[in-house]
Length: 586
Image (cartoon, rainbow, N blue to C red; front, side, top):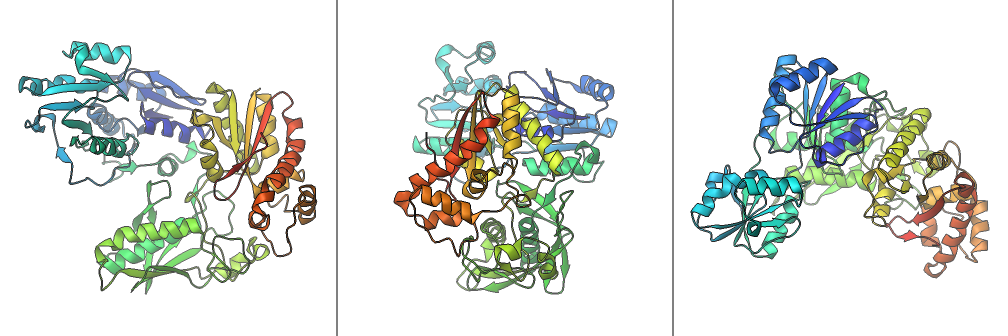
């Protein structure tokens, strides 16, 4: 059993990660005022002191605690650390992502350090800080407190001596010479608050986040993560039985880790056992690496995902250069056909991994940037890649000579077909429990990101990934009686769906060029299909003026196969191109 302390954005994200397992856990908040959907989680509300936390952990058989509470909840952090040591329960701290401390901001360690050479102050540090700021009023500083507009907060403000005239309610603001804010991280909107204050010409005073107290005797080092993937992997390591299947790393993440390791040795002469890798979502994972003569390496870890690249050694060699360049070496395939992120002849290192490698290396080499040494050449190689690639779809796609370095998120979530469908069902049930009357189903993170802009008011739980199982997901939507369903689909899956393939996995279906030609004829479009390998190339083949006609035909065929699975609901189909443009017939 896992006990999660939340009440924050991180708490909500932790719930999403734990819900993926289908295992029971407990979610604890201080006030009970956070709206969070739980399917497998059990909620308890109210502050826990050391005695009550000890009792809860013993009674419920808690084997792991996740501290996802606010960074300034120092008392709770200390209590968690004490209970952790007393009961030998490991703790994962789900920390926020923090931007570098801006020297243009006045940083303080305590409220007593607030400068007194100001005439007025807007305090955005929360209702609990009002009593700790009254001394400023005694010094003649006019203080306005920005709090949440809820009855409990207003009552607390009055009890601490604040008048109605001193209160403004979030997200409103008030005119003041300076603003006081907490170092609340990206999820706390710190950067946005700083930008707003600067636009208003306000002096910015920031209270530094406290060092989080974590028990270290059990594992030697604190188990800190700052994102959902790191949380899942930490749980898999500390409580392996919680998830039926374990996650892995993409080839892109492994290549990035090797590149970071090689750069670290080049710059500092150090050979660490693991290195930090920043993923596309901004979180940092620590990845095991190794070193050999002239290169660093990372062993591909697929987790429980059936992946033929599992165990491959992915190498990186980093050398000083006048420019920054990423190249493919032995065992990395090359594109031989158009339609990919890069032209024929380029190494099959996709756009996402290239950007990961670039960003991670640049964080390390920025001190080297000078006229003498402004860049590096990073060569990625996979010695066994050419042999392994023959067991993949690369030859069919026109990628020759090795494997592809791929990965959008940086993490591989493992799913057998049965487990994947079961996970979709769990997500659909959570969506229904959230109270939304519309569920938005998407193939993955990329299409979800684009479609979310169409439904900004829907809760996160309303967005569900179907992977390739469009038919199964629509049947679930009908069983759960969703009145409105939106299907977001990119062209590669759309042409398969239009041909009647409700499971779009490449094992089950491929693009049928004959049927694509039929749809082009129906739309009165002319396009040469002889040299296309991927359906997304059609966007470039079809004249811009004829795209609406083609979209209408594709969506019409998709609707023909999907609507019978959703007889009692209204279906909206959104066709998405690679740039995020959304087409529909509605």
